[in-house]
Structure formats: C-alpha cells, structure tokens
Length: 503
Image (tube, rainbow, N blue to C red; front, side):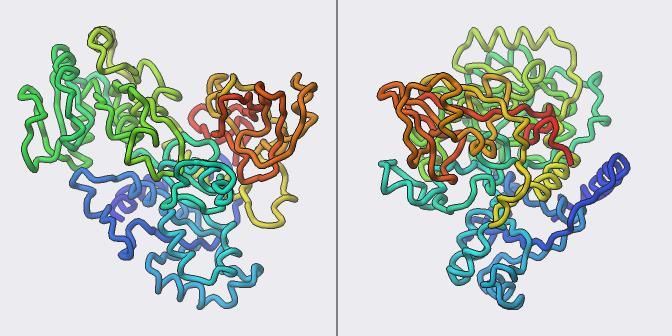
C-alpha cells in the first residue's frame, strides 16, 4: 500500500477541489474487496515480482480503486482467502435472502469471483452476482461471458479459465477503454505536470522494455534511432545482455523517482512492441516525451498467440498502445511499422525537427477522472432485479445509429465515426421497426440468439433481432452481416462518459 500512502495528499487535494466545484451528494456503500490474484490459494506472486520487471498493472489499478473508494467515504472490508470470505458472509446473517445481501458492491477479479463462487452455496451466490464488479485488464466479450453460447455455436475455445461468468458485460472493469462492452475503471498516472520543464529536455530516448526477450530482433530498429538520439534502457540487471547494443546506457530496473527523473530528461520514449497496453507510454507522454508506438504485424490474437488463447476476448492487438494512437495522437504519438527502415528514418527526422513537447495527461487517467467515473457508475449502473425501472443511462438522446460495413463489428464502426459504441443502448435499437427504418424493410425478420444482432445478412436477406440480452454487444461480427450499431459521443479526457454524462 506504499502507492496509496505516497499519493494520499494528492487524493485529498483532488477531492477538496472537486467538492468546491460541485458538492458531493453520493450514497455511501458497503463494499467488499477481494484481490484474488494475490490470494495464497493461487500463488501468482505478482506483488513479489513488481521490482523484477513483473506486471505492475493489476497492483496499480487495485491501489487506485481502494484509494478512490476510501476517500469517497465508502465502508470497505477486505477478504482474500476462502475461510475469511466464508466468515464474512456467515457473520452477516441470512445472505441467501436477496433482501439481506450483506454488501452493496463486491469488487474483485476473475480469480476472486471464482473463489467466492466456490466458497458459498450456489443459490446464495446467485443473489450476489448482480453486485459484482470484476477488475479485468484485458476485458471480457459477451460471447465468452455467456455460458450457453457454446452448445449452439462451434467456437474453438470459450475461455474455460476466465470465461462463462454469466454477468452483465458492463460489470467487467478494464484498464484501458479497449472493450466498450465492458466499463472502464482505469488507473491514475502519478505525474505532476507543473513539475515538468520542457526546456530541460536532452536529446536522449528511453527504450520501453524491462525484459530481454522484448529486445529480440530489434537491433536494426534501435540502430537507426540511435543515429538521432542517445538511447537509455531500464532492463533488469540480472543475466546476460547480448540483446542490448553496446551504445545503449542501461540503468537497470529503476524505482519510480529515478525513472521519473530519466523521463523528465528524455525527448523520446521508444516502444519495442511489447509489453502490450501498459501505462508506461502515458507516463512518458505526461513527462513531455514523444512515444514511438509500434504497429503489431500481424495483429496478436487467439489465432497466433498462446498468451491470448484462454483470454475471453477475440480482440486483435494492432498497436503496442491503441489508446495512445486513438485518443492522443501526434505530436505526442508516432505510430510506425518498426520493420520499415525508411519509415523509421522519416519518423526520426520529423521528431528531430519538433520543439520539446508540452507534457500531456489525458483526464481519463487523473485522480479526478477516476473519481468521477466511479461516482457516475455508482449512481447509474445497476444490474440487479428491479433496475429495469431506473432511467435509461446513458439517455436515449445520446444515441447515434450507424450501419457497419460488411463483416465489421460495432466497436470499429463507431470508432471510425469518431464515436464510441454504447452497449447500454442496444435495447433501444434491437427492434424490427428500427431495422426497417434504416432501409432494410424488405428483409425477412427473425428473433433468435445472436452475438451480432440487430443486423442484416446480405447472403440470405434476413434481418435479426437478439433474444438474449447478455449477448448484446459491440464486439460481435460475421462476414456476411451488416450490423446496426448504437454509437454515442464522448468527452475528450473522459472516454467512458458521454458529453452530458456528468456526476
């Protein structure tokens, strides 16, 4: 909890500032938090690997969530082990009665969800499912969440390890806004923009990659860049370093203060294509660095990556950091094919002519941004019985309907229009009369289980509406199908929320 303690004064200042702008009027909730990935029952050892180049994303996100909930005044209880979880529920009375559920919300991860599921009676557990919020860095698409999909359709892998949770897809909370069927929880970038002085930049670059395997095959790419700037690295000091060219200065894995000092000096932050979708590029941009964002060719997906084989998503990763390209862009982000030597040269020549960049941090990854999302989610997101009577959120007035290209999903369709696909608005358009109004009146209409409805099938002239709410989502696609997509606008610096969706 070192991160929470060190950032606490900033959390306090942020809440005070937000309260002055608009007084808080939220309901205090009783919240159970269960960090399954650090449970002794599973032994992933993420916490111990943080300073060995191991994954920090889960630890950072959990720390920021805990700090956010606590400073908003919610009543928090922590249980990570099976016996403690059992006692927590048994000590609160008859939690099998849906009116006596002991918590308003349960924040956990997929490991924690399954641990709780295995700990308490099935009938009782079903009463709790609607209050779960699942921290899920990679995201879960509807077809991998809906357990009854596989018997009817021949998908190769339904993600037995991570899928089939039977939740509303919006209950999954992601690290980046890459899966609009889920909700963005995000994380906080610990950077004081006012402390960064662009005039103190030096002609150096920092290579993004702590582990040696990330450097394999990148020598030519780095050699070209090194003609323009002095390169620095932060590779773990253990083991041989044959992959690191001799003209690169390696500092070893740095603690945060040392890394921030290096980034404040650097002009460029150089991606190697891995790790994928990490926070470091945003951190570097916040220190005024230009990020070289490698294209992933071919895209990484289930089809070619063992590490994605059991993940509950069919996403294709086309860039090292898709958020940086889609929502930030030039002059902070240059996306290139790092196997194209001419493109590398042209990019470096363009960068060399640019003045030092003003530090930039998207509001999505500030303390205020994260607190606002949680406040809005807690007020408007409800997945329990009876929530149907709540007002539509986002409101119907935000709906912008677009028709996809053949074989395209709604995420890309809306993105290409500068919008976001909004799954909460699918019930508004999942109707025969809506499809007819868009010029498909002559088609044969059917209502069935479908992961791409509402849609029009050009091959057989069939228009489909979906009968299973859990399968309504942005990600589904079919080569023969044109989808009807519910898009909405978004606020720059708060992608998760529409322009009128404020706390």
